[in-house]
Image (cartoon, rainbow over all chains, first blue to last red; front, side):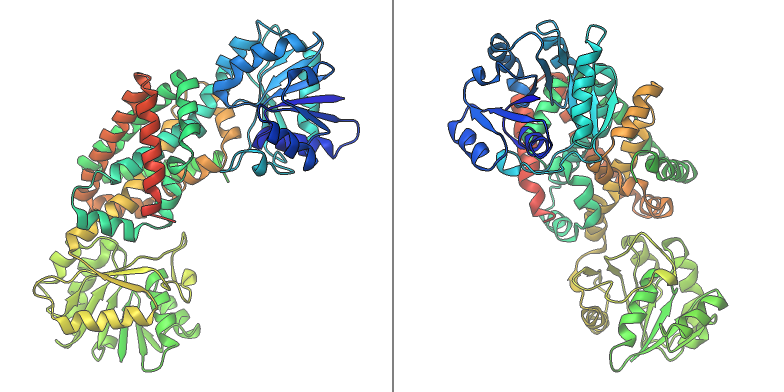
Length: 280
Length: 280
């Protein structure tokens, strides 16, 4: 099976690295930068690479792996080079706007989101086994051919990921809760601490900050471009989560203002008891 | 030097374990529970232990290590048994209410906060080297004898902790920022996710939750008693931090509502750039 990878960064490069180890796959990479193409071939990430989409004219499946903001223009340039039976899929972390943009243009399109990553980006960050035991979400819609879904699902399973299927909008709201909301909550925590106007207290806070602050602030101190993309492309779902969060925060503040310690304890017990239903 | 430890839990037990390895210290433990006293002696945590404060009549220094809520009544019962030169110190994670309560009753009192802990509690959780390279904050006030401060600082240094001194109120506001606020922010995150009324989306969120949610929700899913104590004993400083946090959250929400992506990117860049001034 000929697999095209458009965008040889962390995700595209890692998909290629894994598939190339498996029998029956030929990997074809496309990158805007000639150096990335040379590097990808030299490192054995792909069998062949080019800056031209023409390389993908014989591809059976093409993975779209550019940054979220570049997907629309990439698709426009790519489609004229594909044969109609080519299955197209993407790896974007937001699905509804991407599915809405591409599905009308390409029948065999399957929205996808391999939920793996590292703090790094680029081909140098690509690694083997990145998707092992991670969720790989597919978001077919009514018009998506089941064979196209099964083709992408089969590849995802060969990456040893766990394949899930859901509506694009359900995906976007779910990741708003567990991925995009935490970034804004965590970033606001750092921003709040910086508001401390007493320099002595701010210095003490910086000195005393330890594992609790480290963990709670981690994603808020992450890659700003990723956070921006989440907000930009998942704006409505994120705002819905943020408004709910704000109400819950207000409730917490009210309990503390009213010194309603019984209710606060009950609430803290609930969050302690329910967290394991999300993460170990 | 005879060291009394009142409350043989995680902190008291760990202080005793370390000091007992050093030359010149005799460790005397007091616990309400006879079994804890027996266990502490059997495990070699202390040289002698009793349920009676009379054991501490010859102590040079006494560490108060009961839960925050039990400190006042413990002090009342303890003081009649001490000689006036005994240096009294505590290990509570909030300082102003404790210093205000004890300083008028005991001249040689030094508020203290060894900033170390684990998710576990009790004597079984006590461990060696718990305080190595951790902050140990002392909060003397105008009336605190410098010799008493130096005595406690010397012991803290022998635990290989880094000793800091500041006002009780500055301590409380600093820990509100980096320890108590994160707990409420994180707990509210879990509470918000549970508000999702679409069962399919909630189930997907639980399935997709990964490292970002794990870290951001960790302290909100911690020991409810600890969170409650923070709110109860550090109410005003915590509320001040929470109000500032809420304003910063509102600002984040407004930028996303207004689709002011430049300002949001600048903000996320700022929080990325400033986080390392708090934690590695």
